[in-house]
Image (cartoon, rainbow, N blue to C red; front, side, top):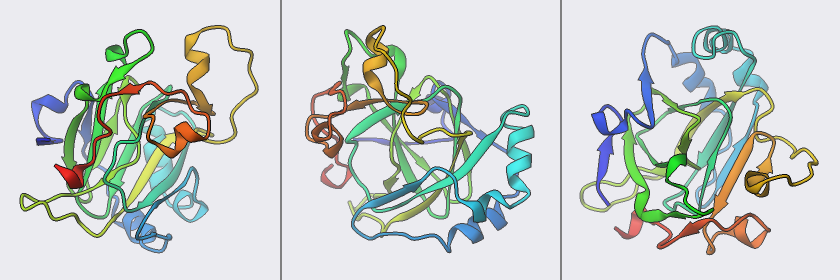
Length: 215
């Protein structure tokens, strides 16, 4: 699978790089958060990160004054497994180079999305990348070199609208999209081989479960 640059024109339909933010203190504080070596850990809002001035800067600038949360996704991952989307953009900032696997919501047809539609983009360390709300995405992936060597892992700041990925609201299913709701402000399509599918998530991904370590 070809890995493109997040600075390339090909990424423009999925998101963009945000410039002008000093995230050095944020990434320094992120180093204190747990980072498993054989799995990923996600926390929607981390108080130690949200105490920093950058929270207000992102809220006022990147989100136009809307309330936000700053959390993290750390660990080791090379697989697609699922794709999700939110109402509102997501910001990702990593301490190391990492890869995002993305697709477009518009490519969902009859409740399914082929993993052949998924593209891979490398995000350099320290870059603030905005993923649009129309972009399907999931956990970051470890960087993979030209020789196929997988990096040791990642620590990634995840910025989202306030309360995203917290407890799922109780709703009556009115339409197809309601079947995808997996958590608050989180609509999910799972691959049949994923643990999420085993937990009851809607199986909406067809084709190969992408594994960057096997490319």
